[in-house]
Image (cartoon, rainbow, N blue to C red; front, side, top):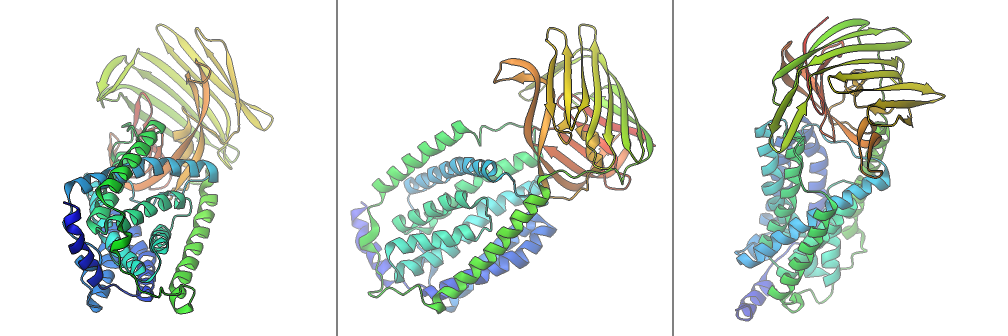
Length: 534
């Protein structure tokens, strides 16, 4: 059945008309300039709408105009045609497998480079409508618009006028650099070469659109989960998921080779390939490369500036009394916390006393329970930089009690843990480390910038340590992301608030109006909601 389609396919390829490489390169540069200027502006105003409009107005529209201006039929030149369900299934395997692998590559790059690029404001949706727009933009608009530009327009031009190797290599490189991600470049290169190779082999724009959509589908799921369901755990990205992704890629490529024969005899090229070293051919790509370098330098600069958490107490009250309602994860009130705040030019002090009832509750796949008890927290920070000076936390119920204390040791801090059935444990750490019990109040000293993200050291005083198979203190690296402002409703009223989210799921909200105060804190076991404060 495949053999019988060769003459028709060969005829359509021999007769198809494409842009010249010079035209393709100029189109590439023009859309890149539109994306990095007008597109970036729209996405800064609203990421969800901006993403959708960028794809439609600045990528798809100029491409369609260029094709129509040159009287080129996209269906013939790009291969936009009906495709068998078996090929679409292969494309789905390849796209999904590619994301599972490249997501691990991105994590590896974070470890290698030591920074994480800031998340654009609004990239993580806060409403279902935003999530729907982002899904449409990533999974539908981006695959259609970007594939029409790169595989439907640019790659056919290179296939017509250069060698087979360059016809895949150059458009794939152009696609990867088009996304302006220095740290994400290795992962983008893997996806772009897969798309370029798949198009070269199938000559079907429909197949690469499906592959692109499958790749973006998993990315969209992760983004929506991070924005709307931060405590929901997904099985990806992870090492097992990455291994499964490799298996999907291998199976997909084997099936692709069996379904589609080697296409080298079916593509007509000019007898004299165009010399790519000529200035009139190269200048759009060289200018685009310069633009990428400028954006890459800005990425590194922003990453360095946001790598460390800079705090101070200038916008905080001198003294205050805050009353918080304590809720369990089922949003039912189970207690109260009263916190006294006082700040001088030298230090800031917080003292909280909490009482709560016992409870058992299951929400989704998570189960929470606690005995009735009480706790006290006393914290001291240095006003100039909000570095921790000392801390004492004590938890008490009818069965057991445990406490931990943090004190200065030269230029470091030392945590001492005392808990029943556990030997006293100590841990030394730098004073900028965030602690599980105090971080939400400490971040009141942050200059909130939406879209900014930080890599922070986070200390848990008492947790199960997998490496030593015992309980004790442990420092983990977490990502802290700032979003907002957004509206929240708490017992104290309606507020516009900044939202600070740790990658472990803990979240805090802060008043936009000065002085900055903690409005709500969703910890591991309890939620603290402001009832009143002065």
